[in-house]
Image (cartoon, rainbow, N blue to C red):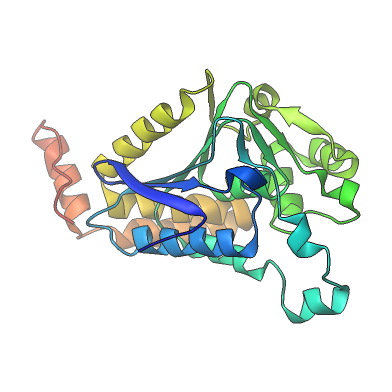
Length: 259
């Protein structure tokens, strides 16, 4: 499969890497780029035997600097509504395989939203995040107003979205948006290490963990508890559950290779 705006690779066993590749546009997310990201994610998601985790990354200077404003500029309100503009962002939520964002440099606007759509964010301690859409006379449209508040709280999200100010990766880690910070140019290695660790584990179960945690983040407590219990019940009887529990009882390491 050939792509124009991304580079795909398998740098570790079981790990699928997507590298954003619009350097002249600072990896601005136009519709073609985002479509390619979704296509690549669906490929990895559909082959659980081959892939156990995905890493999405950009360049050393920029992860993604936002949406492609030149593409958006001619669109009026009627066109935006009739095209259901940015509606394909919701397709991200249907991807079951765990996704890690490896962020170096700037992750602004749509770039910040892309990182937040991933399951885990690893970032350089020099990385910069922000939702500056207000400075363009619009609001975030790829989930920024909904996901940022869940990650850093209402007051902070309100301040940074209304002002359009950026915030540092150090702040992002302290507030819970970023999982871990690393020295510049080491983020991708650490993200791949984590992805490889996940891929070596029970892949069906890791997808179930992701689904249950996302439900907790998107619904009320009782619905989340009910969903968690249903997933818990459904895992009994499959190979991973039997192998994991047998290995524990037999005091040996589990062998997750059979799916």
